[in-house]
Length: 187
Ligand SMILES: [Zn+2]
Image (spheres, rainbow, N blue to C red):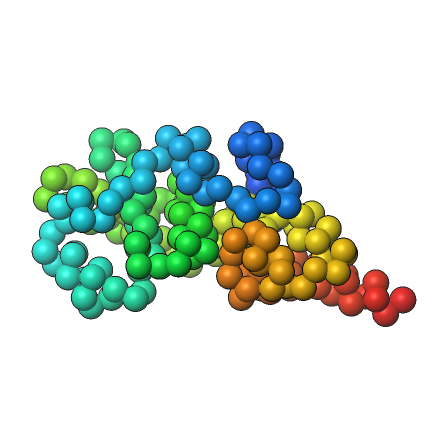
């Protein structure tokens, strides 16, 4: 990831929470943020995608896709896999919004029968950026640090923010919060 990206993500996450009136310790509302960015939530069944794409997404690869971003005449929409848990949808929607906010350009674009563009195939670097950005919004470093300092477990913090325990544990590790805690308790 490029230099300065992580602190930029942290700053944007805090600014977004302030704009939407979401407290540092509250679950992030990815849906409200989509509205704020003028991104529309779309229903998968209403998309009129090609038969091949529908087959790919619902039969061949139904477990592997979580969200898609579409562009119709410059209007952006996101489709979430309705079969997935709310914790996952919250994350996946924010991941898609991250691609949009960071102005990522996909390597490949599919076109639906109605001329809608299905944006896909971002580079690995762009995927990493979107993951980091989304995690920063859902689990801001200052927020998880504060809760961890008060003795909350990773599972409790995950429940607090409406994310999966795995995501929370990863974030506690990657932000250095966990190691900071261990050093503090060893003192
Ligand atoms: Zn992505």
